[in-house]
Each structure stands twice: as C-alpha cells, then as structure tokens.
Amino acid sequence: MGERIMNYSVATMDIATEHPVDFIIDHLPFMRRKHNSEECYTIIILCFATPVEILTKDGLTRGEPGDCMIVAYNFPEYHRTWPGEQKGFVNDWIHVSVKQCSKLEELEPPFNTLIHTRNPSGENPATA
Image (tube, rainbow, N blue to C red; front, side):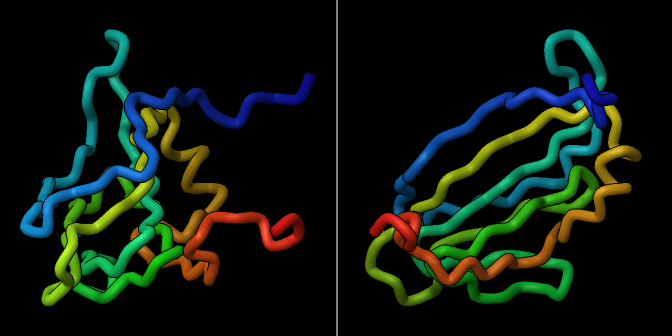
C-alpha cells in the first residue's frame, strides 16, 4: 500500500441543510480542537445550493448556486443568505478534522476561495 498522506476524520456533516433567512454563520477560526481525545485542526468544506454572502480571502462576496469553498483551519467562517432573498440559504457542509496540516498544505488546495462548479443541481452532466 502507498504512504498515507495525512490522518483525517469527518467530525460532522449534513446535506441540503436549510437555514432560516436571518441565519448567520459567524465563527472565529477553529485552529485546534479536540476530536476523539486527539488535538487536530478543522477545515470546513461548503457547497451552496442558493445565493449566499460569504467571507473569502478577498473579502465578502456573493456565492452562486453550485459554488463551493474549503475554509482553512486558521480562517474565520462567515456566510449568510444573500441580502434580499426571500428564503434562507441551503448548503452541504463537512467539518474535517486533520492531524497533519503541513501535509494538507503541501497539496495546495484553494483555501478560502470560491470554487465555481457551474453545476448548482449537483447532478452528473454525463448521466443527466
């Protein structure tokens, strides 16, 4: 077997989470926390099904349906329904506990940057 790049575990997750229109996620960086009695770092993977206002490395910006973001362990998490929307935002999210951040950073994921998938339905275009 090949060498393991890093130790990680999914701490919490949910799919198609519906939020009230006035709901705001506003967390300081997670940095370190205990998970299963071990010190680790938490990164957050988000994917939105509705318009959202989100804090990225470039500041507050509008995210569109299908946009995703990987929030680094040392970056604040802030997002909410886009102002003026009548319904709250909907998103998928995963909190991943990582024990070896240096190995993760070597992979150079686009932390704290909106990733535009252009596929808000989440369907595989090859099979749709």
